[in-house]
Image (cartoon, rainbow, N blue to C red; front, side):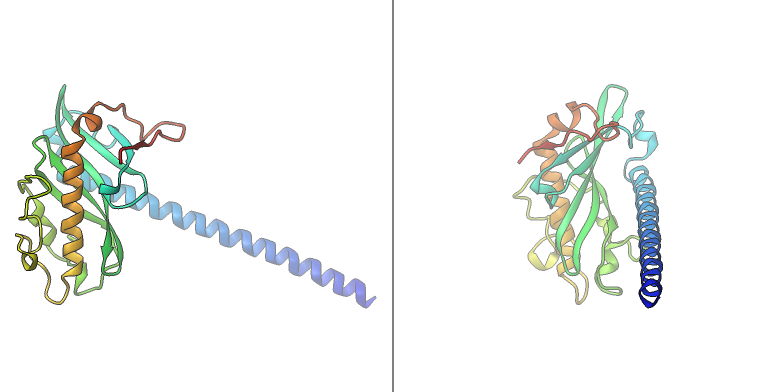
Amino acid sequence: MIMNYMGKNGLILGAFALVTTGLIALTFNGTETRIKAAEEKQLLSVLNELVPESQHTNELHLDCIVIKDSLLGSSESKRIFRARNESNNVAAVLEATAPNGYSGEIKLVVAADINGDSLGARVIKHEETPGLGDKIDIRVSDWILSFNDVPFDGEADNRWQVKKDGGQFDQFTGATITPRAVVEAVKNALLYFNQNQALIFNTPSNCNATNEPEVLIDE
């Protein structure tokens, strides 16, 4: 009798554990999906800020390729969005990562015009210290606008550093690591763009394929 009672309790507890685990998994997946959707919505808004619709005739968020390259800051796949005006290439927006932020990786996008100069940049995701490193976020400070319409003359262009290192970009009081990391990431993204324009603009779009997109590795 006692064994039967214990057995029933065990089954009930087991079933409860399974249901609880399932609910937690569903909640996690639902939350993760909502976060991804919010990030994509933010990205679409940022694309239109960096390359306004008046400057291109294509659907910028759909004209996109997936690549992997260490210059973009990590081994993860990155997307590059191409802006075209009729048959003319106009600009590109590259996803990039600053791997050496003070509090971890900083996700950003960098826009380059057809001459390889910077049109601008935006930080998409970060965990930098509030009141210090978070000034890279346009919702906190306009510091990120210092990348708007800035010439880029290649890897040896010493202007592409924070002022403390002899460059032209401001650092933050008490927080040099974060802006230094972002400047380096933007510079590297521009360097990648300048070295790979033919690949960037001539590769067929593969971001929205129904199957797993082909990832171009150019390292």
